[in-house]
Length: 222
Image 1 (cartoon, helix red, strand yellow):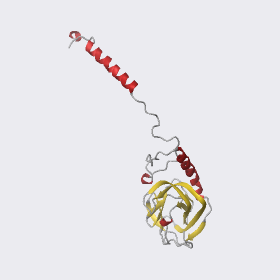
Image 2 (cartoon, helix red, strand yellow):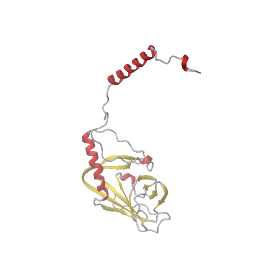
Image 3 (cartoon, helix red, strand yellow):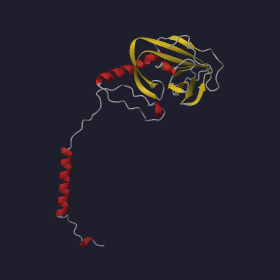
Image 4 (cartoon, one colour):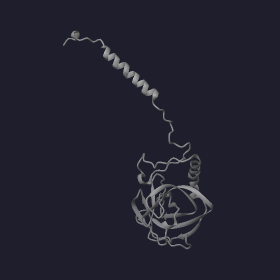
């Protein structure tokens, strides 16, 4: 079909439609309210965002940190940095087990519970169960004492920092301990999670749970 019969010149109606469209577009852009770039975002935030325990091991899923005022944010930042002290502060042994034959999966042999008494209440950042047990939550906890639980193995099975270990008491997930050769250690902030007679267990990524045969017996009540 030949194009000779068609008038390809733009009509006045088409030109008017294009003009009105441009006017409306410019008016919308100029007159639209501008939102602040950081609307609802505090001026300071904790330096650490903790991996959500519910989605641990799933890349890209994190626990959101709610907005806080700058003073509280600064306190949270200090608490996050201070949490490194959890594993270095001196404590006293209030429970320990005898060395038993190694367990079948991770060669677990014994446990130790330390109590750390602080000179004054201090805020720490930690992933810990809710009061009385329950799912782990990223929390800022102000305490004047806490407990360190060690579980030891006959072999250096905890040497790899790339593995995510779990520590359990009576079937409740206490948290994700630090591993070093033959020792796993975890800070616990609620003594009710470690009652007399508790059974302790270890798993890797919440799989293949291995339980110590000996239960917690205190020489001094926590």
